[in-house]
Image 1 (tube, rainbow, N blue to C red):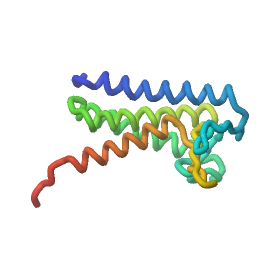
Image 2: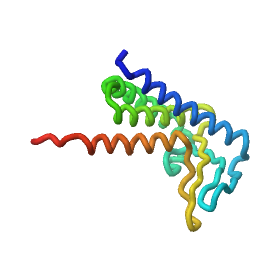
Image 3: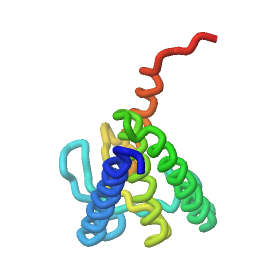
Image 4: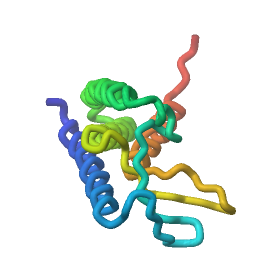
Length: 158
């Protein structure tokens, strides 16, 4: 096994655990669509999203569950392969681990609930950003880090 790989896989597992624990807390504490004002710009709310980001394909009739499960599992296999290849680095495997953990956290929801549990609701001046969760946050941070890593790479001459 490549040196460093267990650490990166453990980080992905930690993301899954944090994601699932927070979602279970929200499920145990809120009714569907119930909201709790935390600050003037942040609420906790229980929402089930059968679609993807921004509720993409939410009303597609159910086939999207398996589409997103298969897609996320395929991407997860690719992420583990990439983690093996880059395990000795720092920024790229961090990004890949966050994305992997987030993808698997949301797959677990799709298998358990036929939808993803979202609960973080930020808003400003009456506009609400779509609710999201720890897995979505990890994926977003991972993608930003991945882009940063690509930007930092030296340019090759043609």
